[in-house]
Image (tube, rainbow, N blue to C red; front, side, top):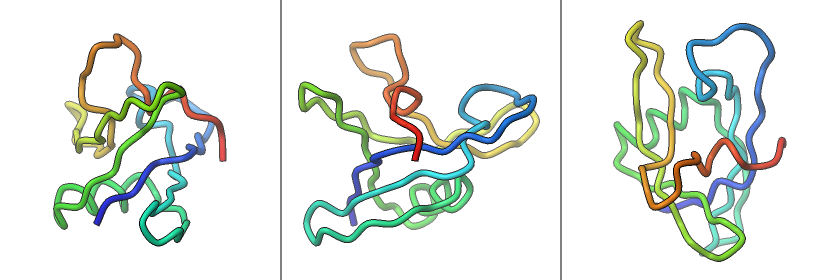
Length: 96
């Protein structure tokens, strides 16, 4: 299954990196029109364990896939796969 990430929700406080501040990700299945939200950990598992695809689309229609990652302390999170831009496309999304 493939979904487009439409927004993110961040919690406040100190975090190991900006990605671990993401508490929820809003998504849309563009094939079915279904929408929903997953926590950061649910999205990590959905991609890494289940082998599903999640991606971010920018204003020009370019896509960047999400990949699972872990901090040195073992905190699980997702980020976009490196592409031509130095910015992380996921962190640029609007708040849910």
